[in-house]
Image (cartoon, rainbow, N blue to C red; front, top):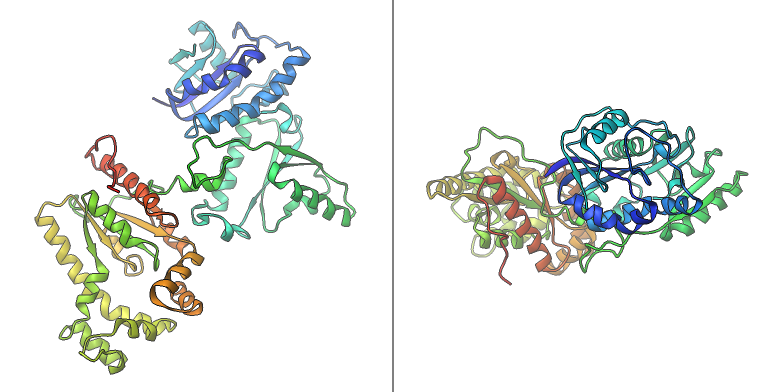
Length: 495
């Protein structure tokens, strides 16, 4: 497999329209990261360079071909970053020397001599490539050469309502990625990519904007923009609707259309941040820190990992041991919080203690300072025991793993998240708390977004158990590959 490829399509517009799906299928078995597509229709000979000539009907077909390529790519090779180069349609003499990536392989749909391909790639792209293989969008979506295009990114004002919004990349990362994409596919246009802090963005302040592209779902919003522009004495914008691409890879919980929400769901159970080297840790047992907020499904995930072969250390259960009468933590808790936190048998009433400290940050921190060191000692004992027994993978399940700083004991951090509303509902049902009490406990924890920034793998137990277990099996399979213990085709969890 090659990381970066160039696909040169030279057939007639009619054949390209019919066969582009087959070309993408063939390309995905050869390229696994970025696929640039250069359209050179009706070019029986790539070298020397010739000015193409098209009939009006062929031009119409080409206008439909580019969006069709992206629609088909979304279903046939979603893992590929497909980039259709368009600048040449506005300037036949334009060379694509602005592309940053080198080509590992050049693919064509026609039988072109390797010498011609070498000359063509060198002239058009100022690059060299020794691997050549033959494989048996609307052009007016972008402004004319030299004109301007403005794109906007939401900067958080509506993220909270989005599924798995915590996995949305930082604004600066998204802006840079879009700029790089646009400048590669068409360098003839000046792009202005801006953050949007309200539903309208620059459309109601920039008189120069003339055309607004919307999806079929947001036509109403486009009309609303023109209403607001009219109130401000600004000329209306031409509204253009872009069709939605069907997501042929969707499952029963995902949208019919290709959407960022579905793409974020598919990140669950995969490494989103590669683990950093931790030379202070022994290579075995390989330790996974499993954490997450109240009622986020940590225990179920821990049980699933145990069935797959991991040894699980449950810090909550170890915490129960530190509360027993006669322990150092028991004595210090009674001293700090009084006899009111004791049950009739002298044990710590954990429910009463929780009600006492939650909502009072000083008391919560005091309790943690008493309990955490004792639990940490027990964790160390368990880790040493598993090491002696030759255990390969240990999972340390701890709600406060990150707050306690125990992530330094772990090679990776795996995190389970659910929306705040779901956490409130679960906590009310489990502990009999009212909504206000539940919210206070949930917000005493580190926010999901902060935890995601420190995690290597993220799960969500928002859906049925089997969906969560699919995420867990996916993470486990990837871990075995990472550790060099290649799994069979896949590990699955018994139903």
